[in-house]
Image (cartoon, rainbow, N blue to C red):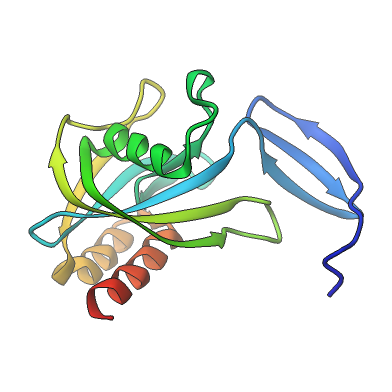
Length: 181
């Protein structure tokens, strides 16, 4: 694999938030106006995983997700760190603030389709600060599921028609590594 190739990008189309790019014959989507993507594995002190649910137009269904969002996408916070973005997104989406943060892993979300890189954080020692639910453009429902029941809950909600974001399973894997070594 040649990782030192010179890249030649051509913008095929662009909207406010994404650009469709051709790079040396490979077409893909890139997000614009941010410095990274964060995903938060939020665990309550009583052993619950905090998940969010929102309708996603591309799949035309509700999707169960970990709290997540963009870093550096707000005009007044263009230089925020990934952890600052994670803290902001957790509070905005779930109403929780965390006292303990740990960076877990950085992964490519779908490297054949997008240049999106996602950094996972573990958030613990949560304190409820607000109701959550997202910003004015979002309609987010918060779920707190006991870890001992998470597989059954995900199976049931999937059977009821919701989709599960693959990052939920990634987060559960790394949470298990932290909890069980």
